[in-house]
Length: 139
Image 1 (cartoon, rainbow, N blue to C red):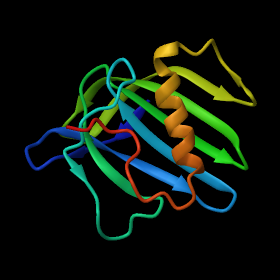
Image 2 (cartoon, one colour; image 1 turned 45 degrees about the vertical axis):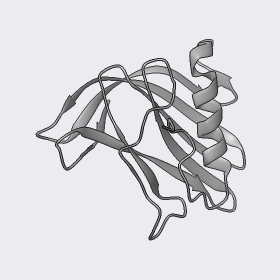
Image 3 (cartoon, rainbow, N blue to C red; image 1 turned 180 degrees about the horizontal axis):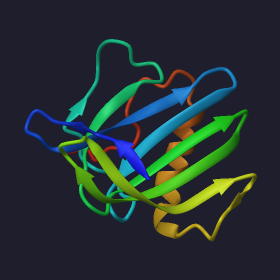
Image 4 (spheres, one colour; image 1 turned 90 degrees about the vertical axis):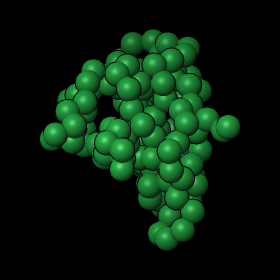
């Protein structure tokens, strides 16, 4: 699978932690390291339109984890991806699907290293009008 990336001013491949919920729906994207741990953001938005938007710009490395969540009235669809590589010229990352959840069950047992990042992604997708980053490494 391919996913669009951004380039930082220094040319680093990046993605935004983003998302939030509306009345009955919500979605989120959370980025972690290869073990699902928080990453350090190079930029955190504090002004402008923040509700359910882009909150923290995270640099990417091969092997990093990306979790996407969509929900409708707490019925979740969750995908866990690993970054295979990034194409800087065309601004996309090649991703490999590691695990997915839909219709109330995982396609295979969830590895415990992803438990925390998945819970944060679900929280962000259900947080009404989320305006802040939820899964970044603090200094």
